[in-house]
Amino acid sequence: MIRLPEKLNILLLGSGGREHAIAAAIARSPRLDHLYIAPGNAGTAALGENIDIDPDNFGALKKIVLDKQIGMVVVGPELPLVHGIVDFFHEDDMLAHLPIIGPSGEGARLEGSKDYAKAFMQRHGIPTAAYQTFTRDNIDEGYRFIESLSAPYVLKADGLAAGKGVVILNSEAEAKAELAKMLGGKFGAAGSRVVIEQYLSGIECSVFVATDGTNYVLLPEAKDYKRIGEGDTGLNTGGMGAVSPVPFADSEFMRKVEERIVAPTVAGLAQENIDYRGFVFVGLMNVGGDPYVIEYNVRMGDPETEVVMPRIASDVVDMFEAMYMRTLDSYELKVHDGYTVTVMCVSEGYPEAYQKGFVMSGLEEAEAEGATLFHAGTAVKEGEIVTAGGRVICATSTAPTMQQALDKSFNAVAKINYQGKYYRRDIGKDLQ
Ligand code: AMP
Ligand code: GLY
Image (cartoon, rainbow, N blue to C red; front, top):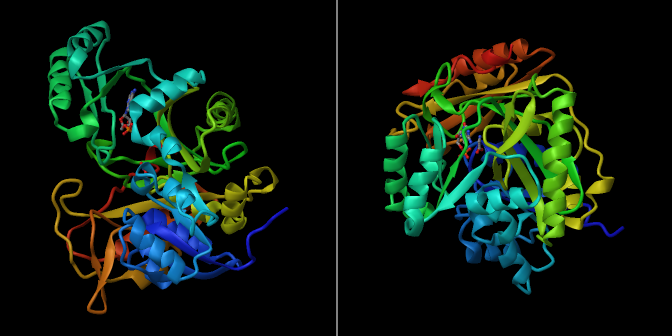
């Protein structure tokens, strides 16, 4: 079997808590030579060298890859994937043989277009909410479709809309008005098509799959907490915390997920000749014990990665290699026992307007509580760590019980100081 060199310089793209957690997993591998992160944050700077380049600037990335003799590229966020970074590498003479972890642009459409994802699921018999897609040309049919459904109404902008493209409404009149707004340009081009779908009632769960396009490995599942307020109230955020494993995702439920969703998804990619050597993140709803796909993402979740990566006991660089070399059938995933949780600290005002640049302290004291900190939005300014995003930093802990892990993370978070710190105190509460 052909293998990549034993030691590799690795370039990781992204700057969030997800990337800090991936960087930490890579840094544990004896196969790592030097780690570079573009652009990274104050946390990743402790594990490798941050390079101030936008992951969407493919030309600048090519230069770095050649300058630094990079032997593997790992793509964290969705945007460069949807913009075709993998195809850019494969089509460039100097980069064509460089392992890059992530799906091709065609594969990334599973996240880049909700209509494409729904049609893919229909073609492959994958359970998901019934839907129809509308454009400005058939808006009247959209109104009729809304009339045929009952409340609540789920409207989704087709394209990427920074996590804001899903609107759930309780009255028919509001749903029709929203359809007109979306098709009228509320989300720009992302809303030129709108998917309207049946509302699914249940509890959500995030399932992560590493695939080489034919074989797959099921990574630990997780549950994230999307709303800003305790008791799942208020606006949607990127995620306020996560836990893994998910108690309701027992072996019977996961068997259904694998049989009905994961296996047919990967088989569908193979059948359609889609080059997909990356992660599939299936956002699903447990509806009375049966899983339905809410959405696909073509990257790992954030903050789910901050609980999934620490649970992986086997070498992730070996896993990336097997994904790229299409030998995932011979990779043995090992997972740590126990519960891993993370609690996210955000900036006051998030997910709406917030200020940044506040000096942070107490990070060492937080880690002394037995938690690992993953930086989400931090930067180094004049030698000090400052806030640099809406989601700022999270505290991940592992323990034999979920409550013990939560206690450690909450104790750690209490030690972190910066102006306007906010976090949810009810992470994991609904699962106990
Ligand atoms: P998405 O951006 O697709 O993850 O959707 C955002 C959130 O909207 C999801 O996390 C769900 O909580 C909710 N959602 C999306 N689709 C549906 C649906 N068909 N039924 C109920 N809730 C949904
Ligand atoms: N936590 C959800 C996401 O990464 O999209």
